[in-house]
Length: 122
Image: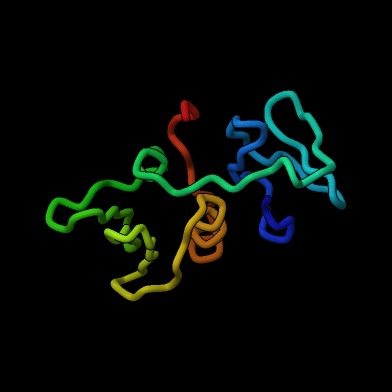
């Protein structure tokens, strides 16, 4: 289950085994996808884990020298061998992340722009 206070319009979440964009939030209701279906029970909404595939789809590229490191401008993400994900800005660790909506929210907070996904084929 995901915490409603962490959701923003545009976040990617999983509902009933399908990844969807959050289209709107009102009270405890969350609107999803192209058809605008509504979920009143957040028990069905799950966060999406950060994966290499998703990082590449939102414009990060794999660092040539450093293992499990992905870069986008001044930002980098390091996935440790134990699975811990560090978000770095100008080589300073800013946060430890686990889910793609956390990355989307942090990116927006730092840049003032959305993290764009170049493909919706998950």
